Length: 319
Image (tube, rainbow, N blue to C red):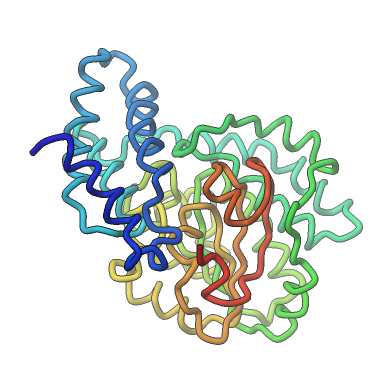
């Protein structure tokens, strides 16, 4: 197999007959990012690896990427990359220690988080904003993490897109709410939101979705149990990927998605896989920090912006 086949991916994506299908499927900018994620992960998880070792691993994973069907959605690429890294390191869940660390770190800030919510003129809005602010905890993107500074500057950090008014209206009509979780650490903010919702709206049914297996630093059932979300609401398991692959989620996850009256989708990975997925009559809100230029362009916001966006239709992000 020659290196030229690697660039066949670009030729396929740029062809006229597939252009309308691509959208949040593989973008040209994403390939370089994925290769960089391999290096970033290996430097973080196995600092003793030499440059030659890392390049060899990158080449092996690139070959596997080449053999994926074209075009295919980003979660498939993310799943391949991070499962390949786990296999190379011989560890089922290489981010496990970091997941525990960041859950514990954010738990140490719980008094601060509760104060920000309780002293807010609009506690529900602040709790939602904190859920989005927590999306900064992500080892699959090139941005820097400074959670303490973000919390200190919370009042001055805007939601660049803020569809809270639509959320309030939808919430009055919703009985079944499905939250699709994302990263560890971030999930502690989700927990505080769920606690607030249960106090204010005890009649509403909340279900929380996690990954079905290790995927970067994303939440799985193990971490949901450790931070106590399982004590608050039912947990359903999705796919073992940094996003949602509907063909691979559990039956319970699929039912929660299909039966929901309102869906909160956390993070870029979930957005990249759900941007054009029909959600029945349930409005779907994307809650994320725009961590790269591709997503920033789709939302028409600068990189680093916090976004709380109610999808209007499955055509919203068609390029």
